[in-house]
Amino acid sequence: MKILKYLLFGILGLAVLIVIVGLVASNEFKVEKSITIDAPASKVHPYLANLKLQNQWSVWAAMDPNQKIVYEGEDGMPGSKYTWDGEITGKGSQEVKSVTPRRIELDLVFTDPYESHADVYFDLKESGASTEVTWGFKSEMPFPMNIFLLFGDMGVGNDFQKGLENLKAKVEG
Image 1: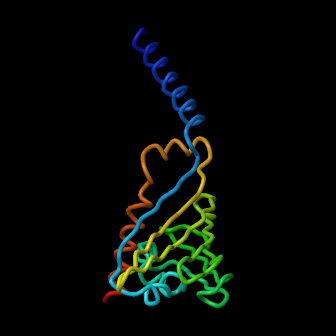
Image 2: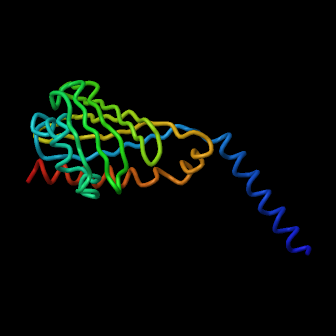
Image 3: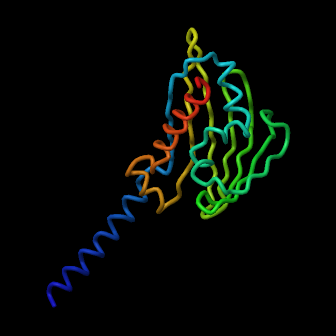
């Protein structure tokens, strides 16, 4: 009986600790990865601003090739958008917010299996015949999900790095 009592107190203590950590932990979720591509920014830029070209190097498009995708607007321009509905990738949309020669900003919305919103950006920094591409993501994770942020970028960083490697191969190929 004493063992059950200690076990119960242990579980209760762990639950209280999780709540306290969740209340004091940051809810900001930010990921940023970079790669250098042996090509001028003018050759890289279309693969970032154009949503149809993004899907040629996207990790998630490759992960769920049967997802339904709908494109809207003039691709590569602010207001262009695509929505997806996939068994693996869930449902959501990505809309181009702004496009300049050195930065592309997107609005990313997930609707299923959970709802969330993120600001996504690509920065291009040309140096000689090469371009450094930085892919960034900013979002918030509400309590108690913010506890998971303590364990890293939850795989998004790995997907970003693989996506950038795919982009490099596509552009340089």
